[in-house]
Length: 137
Image (cartoon, helix red, strand yellow):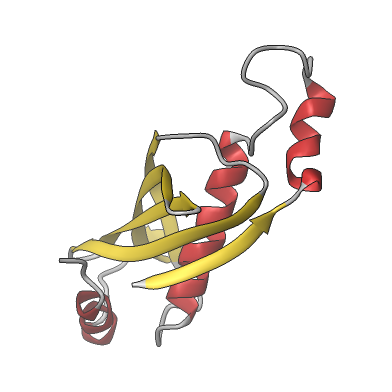
């Protein structure tokens, strides 16, 4: 598992309040859903770049999110763990927390992809071994 930490600032929240009515219910005081996904994308990219052979060549065909509570200003942690390894795909869970409070669980299916040939490709034995070493219990 890898923990990726960042800080949510007023500037992270401000773009949403500028585009919608800041007095509308549910707007203006928390990180938007898409900003949470962007931070998860950064977290799993950092994780994959820490492994050999994952510098490029993956696509995201599926993302499933359970939003559990609002993300406010302050420290934000995203724990990245592998939950499943297949022949050409694998699934990663990003558990988003703030001050120990669960905020979101993001399941991401990633597929090994050959951009030149525009097709999926099997994971190498080395890639599989590295991913399997990080499978969460």
